[in-house]
View (tube, rainbow, N blue to C red):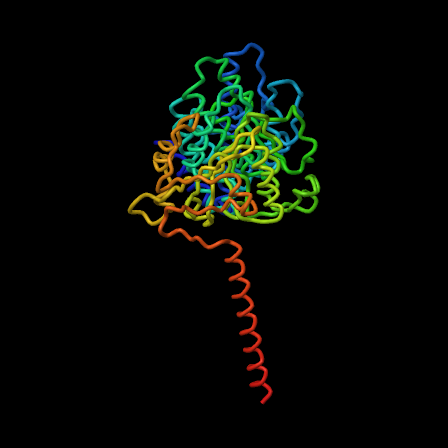
Length: 485
């Protein structure tokens, strides 16, 4: 049985259980079970390779000792063991504080985990299926990695999933253009399920990791934070699946809850790769962690302020931002001014609205910038849906090869030889300043380009709303008169 078929059969078993309701719970349930199996397989390998190695999981709760026997615990006895013994023990693990101690990883994963299954017989069936996967078998692990990516993709129907899922083609393109190397501190402050981190690791392993020391250096240089429990659990499991021995660098926290001023020189990073949540509002009080001129409750804006501060001189970033961040005013204007003064915003790739469908249908942009020098010119590149296709969709999603023309135009690491063309244009920092730091420049070569100024559009909108209000008042007057008769 293929790994994909096996995972599907596990999900089918879960659908029979009255306690598991919907994709989010099903994937959460799968995640903690996979986590325990993966970490136990890793432990058994490390026990052979290292003298005196000790698992972070107490002996009686190790997968091999309660789950591996297909004729082992089942029914009410299994449920009682999982709910009354295993979960309390995992949530109560006390880290030693020693380097490489994985107890905190285990505890953090189980902090918000829950056993949704109510049938011990069905749970035993699931456990027995998972036993068929050997995570120490490299080819099988890689195959399972593909299946896991599909599971993450499935979250699009689990509610609010767009907050932590970025199309893999987009992450791969951004990582390829940034070209991270082992030893460079790479940070994703809103890491979701870990897509940027796994792409960065694959990129470095393909190009730069030649010795065990390179691998160790790469893993030591990763940094990540995720606010929500489900994506955090998925991310940690994803890291284990991709060969990370100690994923304790993935912190379960809110990056924005830390005061802006407390991010010191020692906290600076070399690379930021992220898709910060946008369209959302932070809880009351979070904005007070930021300087007065940057205070807002809009999550994407607060993250942008933080990115500018966190990059070391010479550091690079690739981030996803919505169209609203390009033309917005107020705090957004001050943020863009700071970005252009402190960083070289050298490239903006404009994506079509359909890239993030079906869970978001707004225009997005990929911003590439370097800290240390002010912006002189900004290159824009318009990414278009492939010819013969009206839009990206679930059945026809964006793929890495769709970025080939942009990669060809890019001009290599030095960005040399770029040319203005049907999809590319350049504007100066002075032009941006003259427009009040409005970065919403449309493609001047497109016949379909909308050349209306946003200020004019807002004025037309105000006029339309005023006319609508006047008509509503007239209608109310007519109705009132009719009712009075």
